[in-house]
Structures are given as structure tokens and as C-alpha cells.
Length: 244
Image (cartoon, rainbow, N blue to C red; front, side, top):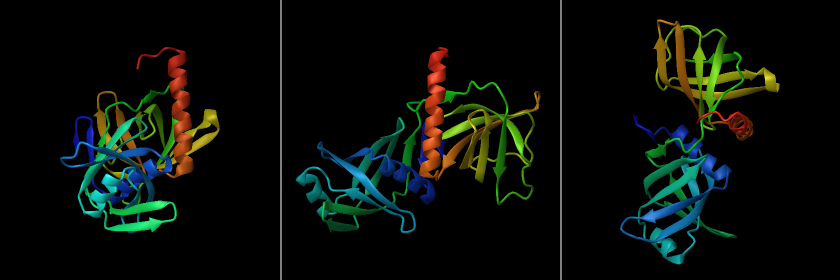
């Protein structure tokens, strides 16, 4: 699934999460047709998770609209929090004539590339204290007890935690936890998100577990809280001139 900094997303729930983020922030996307030099700007207007379709705004030039009408396939590229999003083999299955213009109904892509080169700043955490972390999984035979972890870094899309124990049963790569709660006591708030385990490392010599977690299907209000916290961390890092 992962090749260097390039991550292929193919689960509909994750695809929906990325598309919803583009839509929620009104981020422009570029539409390209194979063999055509002209690029077209558009916006993701809505995402239907149940039907696994999304709605794209009318292309900003008539030549692009004509290509959609001719059922030509196209690719879409955008940037979300500094991370490049790219998917291809798109085709409109319905064209809606709305009051404000035309809207294209498009099935979710089978694959979506999340180019995770660190354009998205991953902020180092300088709180210097341990944080209570709870991980809830409905599929684990043995539920994890409340854990204490150090929050190593955080970006808008994920975080890295270090635990002073060898977690049992071991974290599995891509293991889904329906709820992670990070208690930021110093800020009088809790971050509650669904996460996916990534790149777990077990240090048996020092009895330590380090694991990255990717946020999944984050609610807009919680995403806003995360983004505010990351901005705070960025400012703190700049203030003390920590190397990035």
C-alpha cells in the first residue's frame, strides 16, 4: 500500500474522507484530460458516502464541459493541508442542471494517491509531559487498557505516539481503532478521533512501542480542533527555533 511518501487509498471510507476534506475547505482542484494540454479548475461540491459518488462543479471553460458531455475520462489533482491528492479514470455518470450551473455526478475513484511528502508540516510536540491516551477497538479480542503515551508529533492528518511498554497484542499495520482519545489536559480539551495504525516499531531493549496513527473520517468540528492544535505547535516550534 505504501511506496516511500506515496500512499494509495482504495477503501471507499478513506476516499470519502479525502474528498470531504477538499469539499469542506472549498479547495480548488485541477481537471485534466488525457492528451489535452488545457487544464480546468473546479470544486468538489458534495460527497455522498452511501452512494459512493461525489459532485464536481462545472468546468470553468466550455471546452472542458464538452469533453465531459462526450464521456471522456479525466484525472483530478488537488492539495489538502500541503498534501497532494490525485486520482484518475473519472467519468461523469450524470450531469445535473442546477440553478447556479451544471454539476457532474461522479463515482468514487477506485484508487486515490495521497502524496505524503512532508509538504504538510508535522509539528513536533514540546509539551514535555505524558498524556493519557485511550484506544478503543471493536475487533480486538483483548481490549487495550487505558494507556499513557508521549505525543511525539502531529499533523492535520495523523500523529505519532510513544508508549513505555510493549503493546500486547501488538498493533497491526492498518489496524483500525474506532476511537482514540488524547487528553490534552494542559489545554483543557480532548481530541477524539478514529485512527488507523501505521509503521509500528517495537523497541524490546528499552521496552517501548512507537506507532504512527492516521486520522480517519474525522468530524469537521474535531478536524478544526486538530488544525488549531497543530498551528499552536508550529508557532511554538518557530518560537524556540526547533529544527524542522
